[in-house]
Image 1 (cartoon, rainbow, N blue to C red):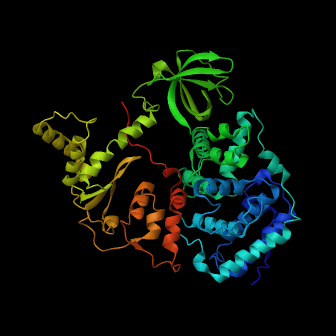
Image 2 (image 1 turned 135 degrees about the vertical axis):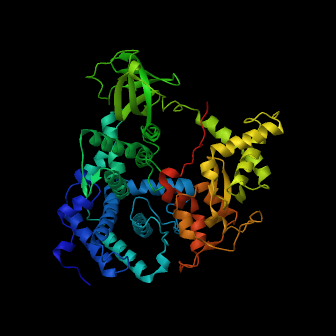
Image 3 (image 1 turned 180 degrees about the horizontal axis):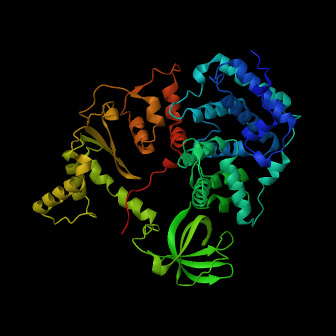
Length: 531
């Protein structure tokens, strides 16, 4: 079936719209023509469910063509992923048995398999797609046809020198240059562009009146700050890496700026008093902790604002750029120390993360004692959990005074119930309490608990749980999913998959998939504060 209608073809304006390089690319008729050839192969196959979704089909054709251009241009955007995947898991790609003939500077047939899986999974975030596509012969033929097309074109395809030069980073590059590259990686590169668009569309929904986005000066600043948040803070589905971490791998470990780029921090936001004003920056002091930092003025908008030492307070978003040097990235509000009222919401900003982690992990031994040697205990949500929680505290010497009497413990129990009456009121359902050594206690409801054939579990109801839901649902922490799968504590529903090896494939690539579907939620943090 041929799609000869001109509106179904990718034109120059479409290539700039779908092609992830936007203003950094050159509109080259060669790649537009090649992309249309890829589009024809996809549409003629009628296998991807995209025949009624032309935009999705065009986007996939552009992603695959951009991958080919990336290899031709030696921009290393895709090979940064495969090299990092090999560092972490011992092979270039998840799922597939890669032969010794895989080359990261060449096109590879399994790259095309993976990129189609990646693209479809981005459109269907709640469905775990079989990366072998149920061993479909038609699908394999489509992949081979696209690969053969690229192979025939390999020697005559032009390089995108403009993009390649843009991604080169010289030593000592300024903040503006680095930020532009990180913005491109996070918002426009062919592996991440759709992720950013999905995120940004959700941001814009908060500013819609009906179907129209209504903006003013304040909301424009808020939206801008959300974009900066995405660039510096959000993790991408591929290996849960942030833009700076990914760009570091594009540069490679031998690059002089590799460690600098890799170590750029996430943003922090806090209230800081200006202690000293100098030509190239400011000595600022966190109001609550009194911790002092050096804020460079290279990327701030403070030069034209009247600032007074020991008087001006900045509520500011910053990233640590290089050791002991911070840069403003995003919102910055100027106030005076006299006008600061109420509690400083950033007072725990500089809590020692290692101390918090050690504190949480110190509960593991008493938890195991109460849960018969396992990291999950089963109970009813109402008072049973309260009793379990207080028993855990009683066994933890750093939290409670071991000299407390039974009467004092009874009083603590009553206060705990009172403080949590909204949580426990009327709830008497079975739950599983999982000890996550990276976060703390997690509670899981009867839906999953009833599918767990654990000797300790009186609520197991001989049910099965959907494999796709377990892997894709962010409500389940990576640690919980890993624990119950590795210890065979859950019965899974697999009949939606025709591939008999699907569970083994998922288990072998479990960490990759948990990173993929959780992104920024993959890294569990202790839910405690240190006073």
